Length: 198
Image (tube, rainbow, N blue to C red; front, side):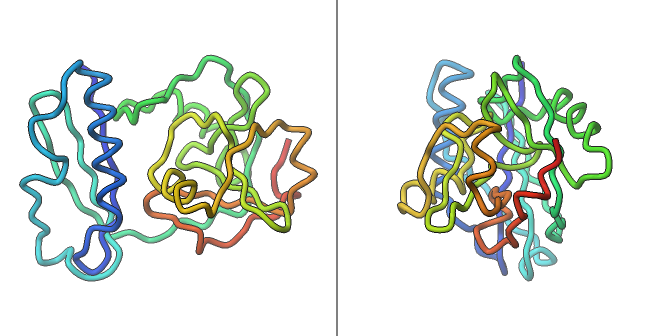
């Protein structure tokens, strides 16, 4: 049976934005296993003392009858360049622990820091996060990402980001882009549009 996972930011011992991870967990679990989970995602969580300071990535791998917590101190990776890659059949609508295709696409990044994946002509995500573009006034995120991330969902809910179909030809209308996920919020440095390599 397929395993799913959640990556959650823990800052100085405090779990950030647990509501959004619980929402996705309940939705994904119900979709994959055809029933609601009996317990919440964070039930049974105990943060070891050595992970109660600084920025920590909590990874929860789960299946229908199993759940495993792991922790690692997190250092934000620098993402300054993105390489355009295409894959029209990639399905990552649930956060599967199996990432073979995403890892294969990541290997195509050449001299860039990550890839920007195009599916059926639309910009979707990088290999490790959603993207959010700045047009000089508003933040715009692709309407049809590969994965509906928790940071993305929160920014849309808070009206800090708008959803829109973004195609390759639209890139020139933006000033820059940020890669966001549970560990990378809007405070990340913006990547200039010219640093997206075709």
